[in-house]
Length: 185
Image (cartoon, rainbow, N blue to C red; front, side, top):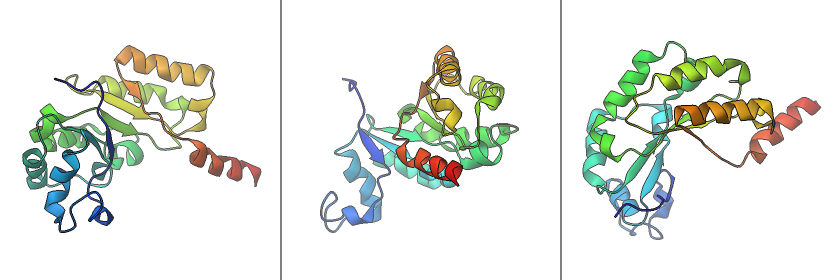
């Protein structure tokens, strides 16, 4: 039976959980199986910083049960450095590397740079429209324009809806606290 929702954390390899969440003697290679015995999903934030080796991806596929879902984040090379433009080769490499887990992928997260504003909607639409349709996606925006509660935010939500994609919701207080501080000085 498919769960109504998947519950997980941001990452599973957290050594301080030994003796509390993990068994006291848990080795690093036992973290994922022990984590997956409790949770059904995990945010794979590690892919934001670097692609895992092919061997690591195969190991994850072996260690996680069939019902478990990985929600990988797009590499920052795509989202932050290239800002979605001219990133076809990097995007292809990302999906190819994760292919052994294809049937266990939850939504892929696209976290945009905080300088990626509403003036870049055409770039965002083009990138999202070119993604493989067999997966689901969620977009995390951080630019204040997308939180105006009006036209820019509605345009983003409408575009994502048209493409059948979701929006990542998160607590923006810390993010906008620094924005407010920057504009005050």
